Image (cartoon, rainbow, N blue to C red; front, side, top):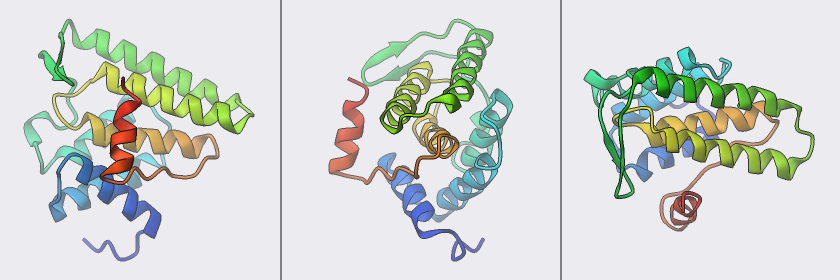
Length: 168
């Protein structure tokens, strides 16, 4: 795959999103690019997010790619107990409905706060066994584009530390 034609800001976003998760392979970057190219042309729905996760994870962890988790996971040292896939799907659908409704916001600060809050909400739902951070940052930036905001690049290092504080 030729990544030479990708917009520099998008390439920077995808690289750093991968690097935050210590995913540095060329295949993972190619898959992130395919997932981003797909998602940025879609409305944010359960189907589009599952497809995005599938495209993103197909070579990194194929058995879970595009699948809602069916087990407990640990997030930041805290156990996220699995109850039912349908509950995770319902939580996601509610979140995506709220993202759609947020298009009516007119104040830029409110849009930025809304995008960050909804990203935190997605990560809190933690719908996948793996790939939540990278999928979530794709959704975050798709949501930002929907709101007329620029792509947010979270650079590995100091910005990454600031980003992690969003979740405290």
